[in-house]
Image 1: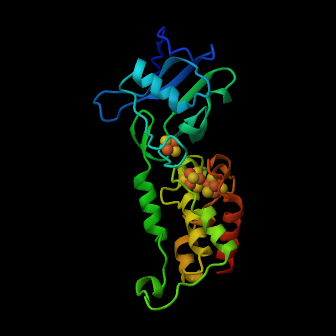
Image 2: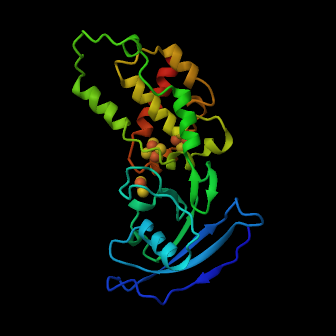
Image 3: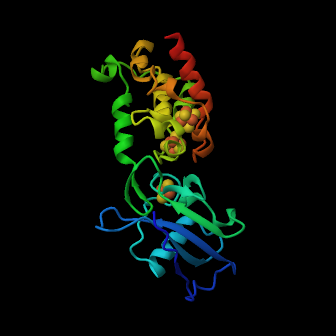
Length: 258
Ligand code: SF4
Ligand code: SF4
Ligand code: FES
């Protein structure tokens, strides 16, 4: 990787609302689509605004300093999972990270590793997430689901079970847990924390009739829960605070019994 250290400073105002602090962003720039382009760190200076997020700062850079800068977003509210990136060494959501979190005002941004790079801070998480969903078969497996009995009253679900399913369904497929995972770097086919949460979700659902033997086929090897090193980078970096530690331990116990 070359380090051109191109420095772009701004004298343009950002409107009346500034904190008076100048933030320094070091961003990994690389467009694999462009012939001859090389990875390099580029420095940008941004006047900090009150309640500024990394996402807002990136928009400032793209609007005022570097129109070609690539990064993803949809919702700006921590819901769509598009804006995951490595922020000062840690995977997180750009739209939920305030610049005040960094007292020295120096912020380094890199794309999430473990995913195919589209350009700069934009990666393709969709391909991986689709692979996980296909492997886990992320839908209810039951005779009723395949052949609905329309004349039978719908069954009630215990509220605690419904809460547990809801809790695990909060995953936004941002990829932060995958990028923080050491095993993921060593095993291309590792299911990863996102997959484990997805399995736990369907295991918790009483409508899903899959047996432990069937789950073992998906989970019971080194590309599944037995490959997990339990260092819990996933738990530390999940912006939705999903219960990775508890569920990974639960899946492992259940698969040992199976
Ligand atoms: S605990 Fe397992 S899934 Fe989570 S980051 Fe570590 S190896 Fe990956
Ligand atoms: S489990 Fe957490 S970190 Fe992993 S993809 Fe889902 S929301 Fe993102
Ligand atoms: S833009 Fe949707 S989660 Fe950040």
